[in-house]
Amino acid sequence: MGGFVSRAAEAPVDEKGYPRVHVPTGRRLSGRPRVGSFSAGPKTLTKLRTRSDFCLVKIFEEKIVLKAFQLWCKDEKCAEASTFLSFISSVDSVKGEVAGLGIKAKRAKTMKVFNDFISAESSTRLAVDSATVETITQAFESRASDENVFDLAYEKCYQRLKFEFMPRFLISESFTKLEDRTRERRGSSTKVVDMNAILNEPKALKTFEKFLASKKNANMIEHTNLWIGTKRFTELYEKKKAGHIQTKECLQELQVAIKELQTKAWTLQQDGSVRLPKGLESGVSNQFNAAPDGNTIMLCYKLMNFLADVLHTQVQRAFLKSSLFEDFQRHAPEDFVLDTVVMHLSTFKDDRRLKATKEDYVGEFNKALEFNHIFTESLLSAYYRRYLRLTFCEENYFFVQEVYDLKNNEPLKRRWWIDDARRLDIDPDKHDTSHILKLKCMSIYEHYIIDGRKYEINIPDKAKKEIKELVESGKFEKEMFRKCENEILRLLQQDTFTRFKKHYIFEHFKKAFFIKFSHKNFVVGEKIKVTQ
Image (cartoon, rainbow, N blue to C red):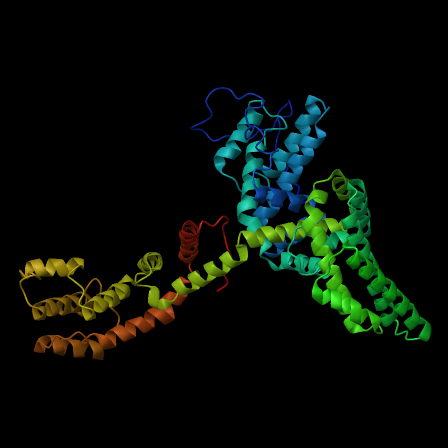
């Protein structure tokens, strides 16, 4: 398996060849570590536990898919994924080479992996938790390192590739191109191993014929032979058509071929070996008697698809489980293996609704990010207020929120509303709405409009003067702050909200929103890329 392997700086070693690495003081492992103490668990790395495990292993094993995955990592600037691939490749290589080697040779190979991926001086250090790094470091420091010392880090890299990066790769343009190449050869089938793919691959077809002969299934042998005869006629027709040869001898050859095909199909239909649908039966009787043309070829393709469906229903499952098919897979052409892997990954992607989940996430995220949701979407409101607090303009948010509560007759829930009600001895249950309205208006005026207040908002002097005149004349109305509210909303939308989406706090909001979305929709995977 390939990878983006980079050489790191050599770590200093002692006289016995062990790396001299600084180990942080404080909490350490209890007891003295022993060789073999650092394995991730029995059969954790060797057993395929889930379907996603199988898919990731297939990505590693198929060179073309692996190369596409590596290029995707490079294009998406996923340096962590590239490092994980290189580390897994290196550990697999070490475990495959240490058998039969001496202690010094094993130590040299494990040290190279340590220097490349664990050492603090490495430029390609693994992005794993510090506890795992310290565990491996202590293994080398305690002379307890062997080829299994990296199992814990290996498992964590493997899990991140499976849950975080593989889902993103399967919905990327890089994988879509692989799917398009597969569809060119196999059509629109969504089956992992399609019967048409087996019949169209010469070596697979021979293996399939051997399987039918070993089972002495005469009926399916007749179906297969009819499919082969139909396929040969279509190839002959396309060959003649591509060469634009319309000589008399050519037409006679096609007539003979179609007549033989019709005779064979009709004979099989009569003796009950092949039962054609009525549409195909009438087509074989009528169309095959005329001169071969485009309609004849369309009928041939329908006949081939019908025969392939019959073979798929009757014998495909048994064939795929047979030893003959296993032997074929070991020496199968690269295109056939690639198609099988890509179709399996495509089926996994469709079953898990990865693309649909991403679309749902992007839709919900963009909807939550609309400006009019800054007061109603709790998560967006919390992070936006945090940003406003850092930029010293949180008073704008509070002002608009209180004016909204004023216009919608919200109860006295604001802190200073409650304080003012107590100070003026106003009981919401005993006093009429005019007293409550006056209390709210005076509270907003005193906290946000009067010069020098802690939460004074930045509005034109003309607007301040108009509100002051209304307050002094005792004309308290729900719409008395409308001009100020419009001005502050414009400021929030065109200035602070735009800058918020470029701030690092917005990245924290996106991560928190994804966690919320994943908990609600049971999503596996992280970091769905959202383009603003």
